[in-house]
Length: 251
Image (spheres, rainbow, N blue to C red):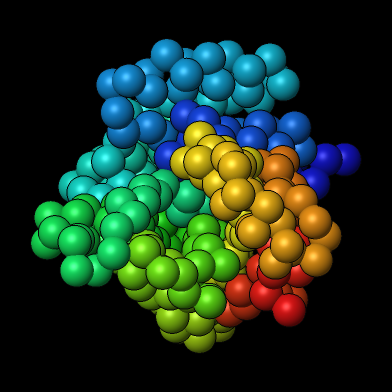
């Protein structure tokens, strides 16, 4: 039997990169999927992902939804419950980065990062805990970052949002543990995605690699493996934790 046979999972920001890898990994293990994207530019990729998920023998809903907008999240969860009747797993993956030194960072840049990275976690969690509490079961997985643990020059807004996710995760774990709802965070290190492609260029890549004990960047599939572990009953006694999937960067 597959690890997530018959489960229903939501993955936000799933059109590409880590989100797409997570969605496919959960589908491979039997979960029905609801995947979201926000930009019209991502519509084709999201549609293709939906076809790949269906080919794995599970059901999928592909929805354009802004995780930073409360009403949009509310509608997404309603659509999920109308189609599948339950929600077992919620992966809050949607996120952006607007890197800049603080002295050059605009208020608009700061607010956009906070809305998409941090408020989205509140928006989605607020909605999914209702059916999870009724079922007395659920796994919420929030995508933080090693930058939220360590900080990084030029990424104060990103670091603050990802650190906020960690505090939120621990608090929700304490609030909902008695209802058998688990909430954990993943803190990826430097992972090869469209968002981090610039890290592989020139001297910067060499410097980053020197700091990673395993000597390489991670892959989206490796983050997806960690997500699958937290989504499944293999982690049934784990909640309120931050799993640094970072090649040893956080040692």
